[in-house]
Image (cartoon, rainbow, N blue to C red; front, side, top):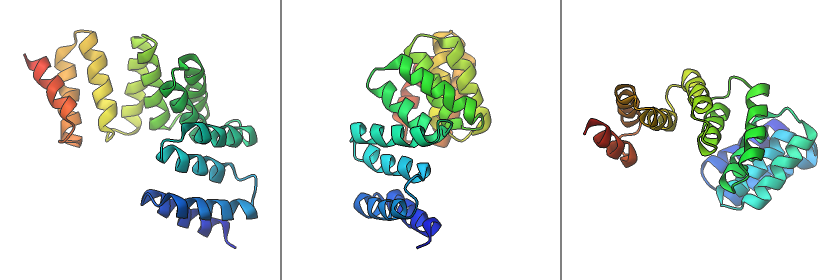
Length: 184
C-alpha cells in the first residue's frame, strides 16, 4: 500500500516497455491517491508509448486540471499538439511549461521545435540554447541548433554542433548527412 513503491514499480515496467504491467501499478497507485497528477501523467505516458495519442492527451489534460502548473504534463501535451499540427496551442503549452519549470531541458527543446515549425528561428535559437545549457548531452538539441544555424548560414558553428551530435549519438545518420553537406 505504499504509493511511492507502486510508482517506482510502475515506472520500472514503463522503462522496460512492459506497458500492461506499468498500467496495472499506476492504476493501483491511483486507487490509493486518485488525484495524483504525476501518476495520471505517467499513465498518459503508457499510452503515448504505444502511439495512442488521443488517450495520452486525455490523461495529460486530467493531470493539468489537477495541477495547472505541472510542467511535465504541459510539455507532453504540448508535444502531442505539435505532432497533430496544433502549433499555436502547442506553443502556448510549452511556454507555460518553461515558465513553471525553467530548468526543464525537455520543455525548452520542445518549445524550440515549436518555434521552428512556426518559422520563428530567433526564438527557436534562444530556446534550444537554453535546453543545451541545461542538458548538454541531448544529441537532438545540438542537431536542432545546427539546423537553425545552417539556415542562418553560420556554417562553422553548425559544424561544431553536428560534430557534438555525432559524438553523443554516432549512429544518428542525419547528423552525418548534414555534416557532409556543411563541409561541402
